[in-house]
Amino acid sequence: MLPFEFIVTGEPVSLQTNNRILLQTWKAKVRQAALDRLPAGASPTITPVMVIIAYYYKRQPPDLDNIIKPIIDGLNLVVYADDKQVTDLTVKRRNLKLLVNIQTIPSIIAQALANGELFVYVKIDVPPEPVELDK
Image (tube, rainbow, N blue to C red; front, side):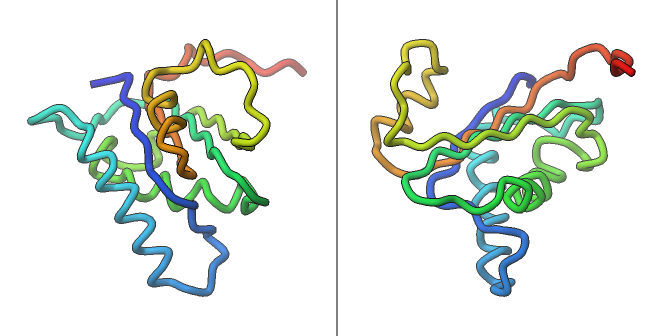
């Protein structure tokens, strides 16, 4: 099943929001976007995973650290059995107005850009081999 990637349209909801209904709705939207792209009969992986999240925005976005948890939680029991399996995480945000070199992007991102909406790109993959950090 891995690598696995999908797009969630719209603006991500911050973990810090006071609107719990909005937060739960966003998690459900993430979950459904993943389910819509999963191959038929796929079950959640039980192995470690790497997650890449890229938020494409037009106006000032929420803090990156606050959009991670709702996305990761939304994928529990869908893509992976438990979010404790996430060993590597890369999070990016890109201003749609400032994109210049889009020739080497994945086709799924190119399609989302063509739609002109805000979106979050999510990719789950096998993590790299663990290495010691430089001291």
